[in-house]
Amino acid sequence: MLANFRDIGGIPVEAGNFKSGYFYRSGQLTDLSAQDIRILKKDYEIKKIYDFRSAQEIEEQPDTEIDGIEKENIDILQSVASINMAALNNMQGIDSKNVKNAMIETYSSLITSESAIEGYKQFLEGILDKNTPLVFHCFAGKDRTGIAAAIILKIAGATDEQIMNDYLKTNSSRVSINREILSTFKSTLTKDQLEALSIALLVDKSYLIHAQEVLNKTYGSFEGYLFEGLKIQKDYIDTFREKFVIRK
Image (cartoon, rainbow, N blue to C red):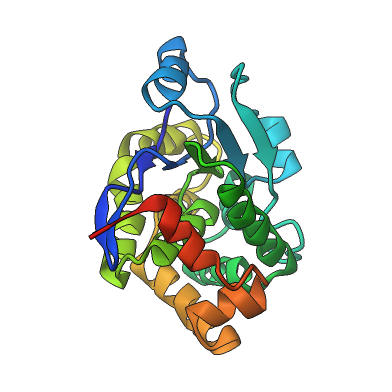
């Protein structure tokens, strides 16, 4: 099913209006129905899918094969030695007292780890190669995907409030599927572990704020992150806006 799927465009930004119909964020694209596939191909005209998950996650829960749509895997947290709390397997078994600290640590890694830097650079450069609709996702479409969406929106000229609003939509978008996941593990996890899992399946305002603080502390500014951290081309923002922002 299409879980936590949405277009992040179609909003007013600094220079005009961020185009809709190009950037779709989502949870993993597993067990898609024929109707889901038709929606992606016909309604949204998706031409490429970016999967930010690890090889293990993909092996355990592969995306549904869709003819005619290019796929690219970028393992955003590959280089991280600590627990990757963005993956479902690692959300299981942690206790409720430590889950938020573990999530905070994961968000630090999403900004500073070698694989995240290389991965988001690869993703951003790929966006400009083809001016066509795409989907980017991870497991839940909330952490690795959430940071990618925040980066795109910031480049487009969205405000911090707009970025946070999009980020927090995940919690309402995942109500049904999170309930299903918790039900699946009800017989195998303790009450405390289930509580921790329920926390880990949600986003929290403090996570994105922490990521921004780490970014500013490490790189000085968002532009510093893009140009000194990711080392993308200096005219990237202007080029991106020329393609994807309708000027006032």
